[in-house]
Length: 252
Image (cartoon, rainbow, N blue to C red; front, side, top):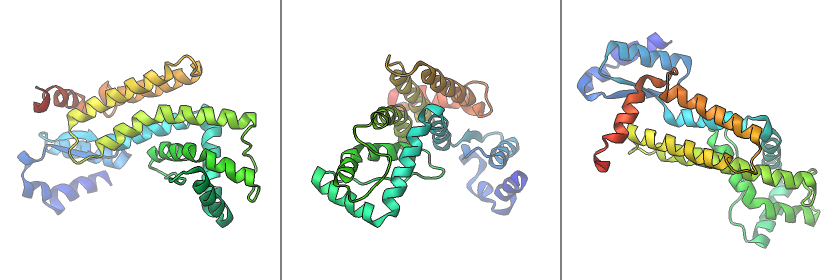
């Protein structure tokens, strides 16, 4: 499959030949086995092209690694169940809309995408904003969501862990969003990646943050950083990111 992709680029479409090799600076794709190998084969054929992973996809997978930690499992399970219940039940939708008016909340719940892992953080934001309205739905007793009791210990723990999930995930989501811009450069990748790591480290350095979870999150960040800026399998253009950051004309 990878060879076919390379041949398709080089021979079938003739796009690269038509544009001109000197005008092609890099090839970017996600890093599934076939697409990564296709990049490597293409760069071997045309050495002047840089081999770059899709940084947006890479950061999205970093978010996935963090939210899959056991510490956040109960939180994400409650999130998914709550969102599903309110999205699939007409009485629940009606009650939540009335509660929105009563609480002055203009934003509803957000669905979680299957592969866009940044949507987990967006859904957590929306759910946190909707908690007062959900509390009203429970108090009205016209629709039973079962497990949500505003004063229960589990509910208090959920709110704390939801807040922690948002704090940890927000820097990555912001970096991901900025790097989706058409104007984003390799220098921006270097800057936003390191800013993201610093911001997440600042969050987990809080003395109230569980120590074991802190170590797990930092382990994920260190592993991901090594993949792309160390000696990992995506580090083929680490020097290009660094050069792009330091040689950006707007910062010289």
